[in-house]
Image (cartoon, rainbow, N blue to C red; front, side, top):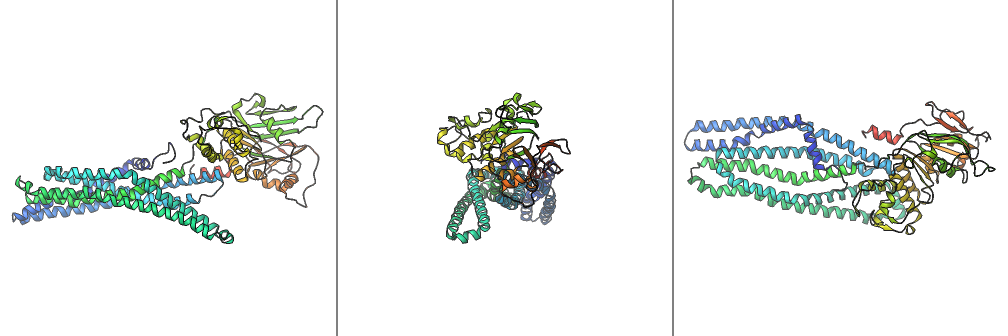
Length: 618
């Protein structure tokens, strides 16, 4: 099973039972009552047979009456077991729903794609787990109490028969357990094949018009056909193993019966009555054999499907253990910052005041050469402002420890060595896996940023590589993952995704936005601004701060950058940017177009995706 440190499906089932001790005790008590007929069945048959053979009709009828009373008690016990059974099963179902939804939301937030397969898991597999877990509990407790009752009855009736019954029953169970591991592998293959068919069918239905328009019906039919053939092969493999269970059933269920029949002359010569022999056969036929058949068929059929399906649900719903930034956090504040490249040069950044709370997602946009990269260097403490001050967590930028922030420039730096050494350069303790193997922390970071394919192509984290052999986009992915793993709570992406395609850029930015701390994106594409919580627009001597939608309405330069021209755009004015306070006392820059708009500051707090996760129990 994939996923280190993940809780196994069987452990979840055991925990579900142990978490409800009262219901478990009640279920055991009612099960003991339900097994009462098995306990007295053989003894009643033996007593009645011997009584009737001795022409003692009253005694024989009394034994049959005792059997009828036990049967009535068993019916009461069977009815009483359902309430505690529901008390164990239903909470497990609710927990699985929360787990799958949390995993689906995390995946959607991370990738920006809908989780159609997760919906299939939620609607189908959770119900499979609920129903089969309830059936499995019924089978297991029935087998345990029936076996115990039959063995107790045999001991009381004729102890020597235990030597004829216990060894073949144990051999049958042993043979079955030897098949379980292989059967689980085949069952998992079947479930994964069914998931692939469901996902492909959903995608096929969504793109049916495009498929017909492109004349790709035959290609898609062949692709779906291959998936169906793979599912059929997996189903045949599972069926073959199901047939092999018949051997275990024959050994454990039929051999005890044959052994008692073969030994009956010897038993009769050594003092056993005909009733005792018939009672022993009754314990085997009406107790042990049905219970063993039910246990092997239930555990080998629906039980295996339950274990594999539950493992799949847990695996799919797991949220990767993302490295948690440990560097000092806090608010980034620029107060009246001015910077120029030379004493006589015009300021690139002029009297800029800005506040970026810890946890914010800010995009910086503007025409080429307007000062966006200069702003990134000022924030990183690599440039010193001529006037004003930059503080992170109340500490001047030039005095902040290196682990507090990370700057990824446009040209990513990758050095020769192993991939692990590159990724863990800022966080040496992040990759603790054995050389040449996967590492859960590195795996989570690579999956989040989009580096997994490159890791596989290079041959794992321990692979040596030549940086010159990587493309510019691949070097950027390595640098982005290195920053993602770093302890820094403030990350500045200075066109750090410019060599990636739009989908890869979106994935990386969403990963940093979901990561604890703040991220500032010097935007290469305007789509980065649409994804950000707030946008800072630089236009020489002016600056605007706000949400994407309001900037399109109130900020002419932002509309120009987006290609949205408006006939009623407000005329530009030349006054410098000024500081405007929001309702929470957080300062933000506003240009004249937003100066009178009280909505220009987005309130602090979580974004909608994070709130959704919390609402669903995350």
